Image 1: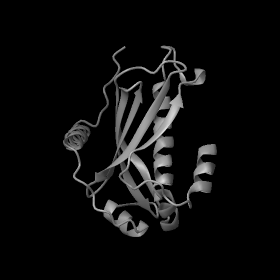
Image 2: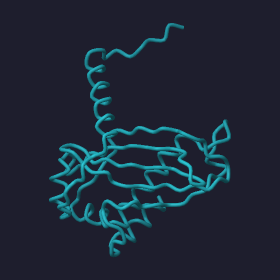
Image 3: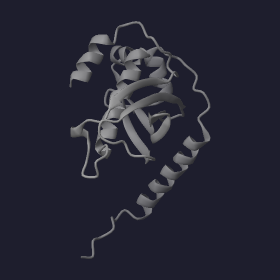
Image 4: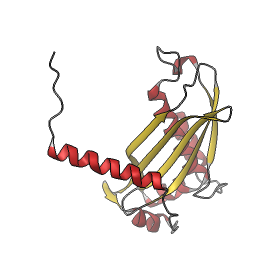
Length: 182
């Protein structure tokens, strides 16, 4: 909650980053952040990623434009690869950037690193909303006055989109979840 209040207070400041810049934040794993395996809890990763995307929106001016346009963005999908664990008291950086968008979603890349080694990589796609309905990234651009052109999306984003389409087809053909036989 404090992060939201802080972001709301800072949202009208002059942007210090452009939309496609990498915004980095430093953290340290606290004792309340760990699980039984003595490393950063997987649920904490998503909370940190939310905080970093919020900071990205503040320092690029995106948050202020979204609030003025009464538009929002929600996470539609995420994929997280846990490469190395983060241990108690370990310092780490989270690097957040917008990769670009297609006709439906905006794609974010978030990386956790410590001591110059990648620990976690996340890929997210966000849907834009206005008046409780989904709008295209292009409509979002017009509403917020950004009017930017998306750079080409990396090949790994297209691979992920293909995987998500396969999952969607699977749920359409087999909507029943697996049953526990015990």
